[in-house]
Amino acid sequence: MSTPVNIDWSKLGFAYMKTPYRYISRWKDGQWSQGELTEDNQLHISESSSALHYGQQCFEGLKAYRTKDGSVQLFRPDQNAKRMHQSCARVLMPQVPEEMFIDACKQVATANIDYVPPYGTGATLYLRPFVIGVGDNIGVKPAPEYIFSVFCLPVGPYFKGGLSPVNFTVSDYDRAAPYGTGAAKVGGNYAGSMMPHEEAVEKGFADCIYLDPLTHTKIEEVGAANFFGITKDNEFVTPKSPSILPSITKYSLLYLAENYLDMKVSERDVYIDKLDEFAEAGACGTAAVITPIGGIDYKDKLHVFYSETEVGPMTKKLYDTLCGIQFGDVDAPEGWIVKVD
Ligand code: PLP
Ligand code: COI
Image (cartoon, rainbow, N blue to C red):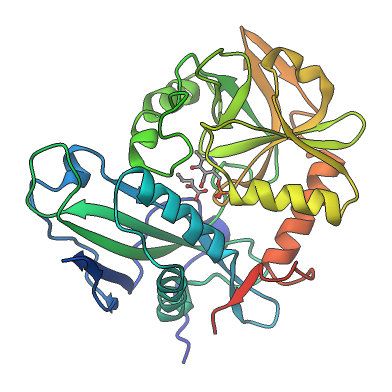
């Protein structure tokens, strides 16, 4: 049974909202408890939890989409489960089995089904799975207990403007160390990004671009999203580096560009002083979807790609193909869509 909720879906941005149910499971003595749904959005944990002091935690982000026929579906949740495995392994936390991860996401979407925005609004239900190290502990070592939880909230665009281009500035700070935790979705990477983000916003930019930490010559990430560029001869290019987060959206776009749009594709170095090779550029991620990059500010000069006000034609095609699949209007590659109800 569905009860209408009073939300202006078109006005949603990316802000926390308490929805009725979340999933929680606890790991103790070598195993996860039977997960359950709860209405309580507060966690009661030890003051000495290693998640609080030493950042022993990780998280994921994926979305549930309402299709034209009113059903609800997830986009590639197996990929988020696999990436969470990698993140847990990197900070010595127990892994959440893939079936348990996907089941938790389905349960949360189903329990909060009234909060999945209607088809056509562009809004979606954002799911936030996370694992935290808890329990009594003070040494810098893995926690004795863990919590795996998934909560959700309806969201609109992450960057203001949706498919309107926004500008970014290049940060002097690093997001990750060359052999650090950049490829894992762990909270510490994000704590360190708050100051560079704020400085970029104060200068009038949507966010900042991070260069590779070793040489500061190559693009790594666009805030909490990956970078892609489209060369003048229509090649889809995205940076390759062991310290960027392997974006599920980025790997989906690589596949779609090659197999749906007949483009050449490559994952390779993208030099910050060779932006001229690109006719269009964008940021991509679950929250960012595809956000066209109007221009990049580097050494006090703004390099404009296609336009500061209009999305370029190939970026728009990629956006329509990706969103078409996510909202069920375009046939998806095998295994990409998981129905919730
Ligand atoms: N890069 C960073 C640092 C992120 O936080 C995210 C978001 O998850 C992404 C890239 C995009 O990854 P995905 O497409 O899997 O959401
Ligand atoms: C996502 O796209 O899911 C992200 O993780 C971005 C988030 C850090 C706001």
